[in-house]
Length: 639
Image 1 (tube, rainbow, N blue to C red):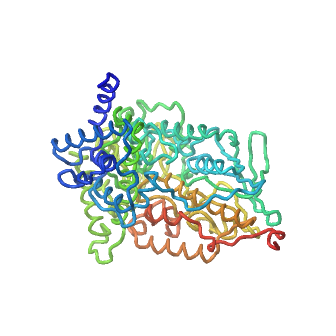
Image 2 (image 1 turned 30 degrees about the vertical axis):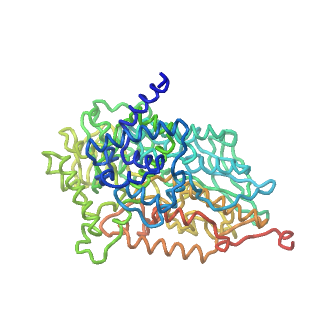
Image 3 (image 1 turned 180 degrees about the horizontal axis):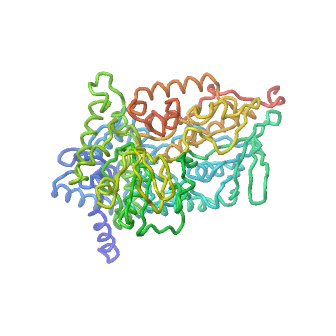
């Protein structure tokens, strides 16, 4: 063996020693073609909770045998031997995932695994060249706007991206509070077409923003982007069959024209305006988490935090040790799952495998996709025969509840008096399941006060709770969430016949077909529109890519017919939304025991999808022209 070969073997041996056993088994199956690696005694045991299950629950001797065989297989592959099973069929892929996860995915899931491994593509649409002069305006430079602009440019479609800030990233640009980070593994919180060498399995804000901004620049989006420009309205001109988009930019007001508009403004971008009497009288810094002041030092300060959602759960443990005293106003407890990977870094050897062995990266991504996207979906369905609907939805959901309760009590230690204040009465997953990065341990600290009440009033430096108790603070942090039901609330959209989208949606009751199109608004598309969000967990970037494929398929249908406008049929739109509402009625988010940001003031779920990821994957894979009405120019119609 040459010195170079010896060094290469040592390098990969060190990496495989830290690698994930279930992923290595998938590599062995495809690299060697030997299916015995999916049988006993090698078959992994099921992981507990969201743990990565790196050892597969297997004895050390079996682990060593797997790692040794995987090292030989990887080196043989690197030497030039092709994969023994380069393209597993969907049935085998399902069996492989069932082995890797120690639980069986739904029938037909093999198709989505194949797409994730690069063996098939999501979109079934055949690209059709855009007519000369066809233009698209993309509004918003966050994760969805970046994706849309990249894919449009790849197709050669003239595109302008409008972004209100001076950089890309959307929510990851604007949210700079301490410990801001993603609650979804970065293996799946990334574009399928732009893999990244992440330093952590769950990256913090700076790394995520750097990734999104870097992808935009790698694909040369600054060439088509108008930064510092805010869209105020978009109007459909029926006679000209174009959209006129009014915007305020560095040079003042301007009107841009395009044949189509894709709105990518997202959901979590308009901070809620607090309605707390006397808030203006607070003498110190008082701000929403999305507007965290640069350079703010809370060391030795009395800090009050209002809220206990995702932002608060990240901020509070991050600053507690530095404050003199921390007061948290949290009248509604939140469920939070154990988060053993919080703060961890990815071992260098594993990062090397993810970079240099694409099959390792692909199967790692598939495991994360199943764990965080669709695994719990079945436990969120109401069982009409379940005898305890007050505490859970079904037997599986009740098992989750027992597990989470035991975890919370263990975290509280000697402060069991806090248990009634932090353990929710509603079923698990009734609100988005949060990842615990020390929240419950922080609540048990002697220098932290949990107020299970609302902040009713601010009287100068004194904060008045609903029960009248007064507490002083130097800094007031409002972790109160975002305006979610009033989608596209930051600009006005006027469609066919002068109809305002806000009126069609009756202010806070947005509806769209596949979260993408609305009758009466030709050539107007949305990414992350109504009922696209993921309440059961997972990466919203996957849905963004699916919707982008679907929008491109609609444009292909438009171009193929030489039409000038495409508009979803009202009956198709209405039937789809009826199915959405019916599905939600059977799920946890309509449970009467709590409120959440997924619902509007009338109780209708408007933010979340009721579908599994593979369901939405199939729905958006092909655009059915029969679902749409095409408007041709008079000359083309006569022809």
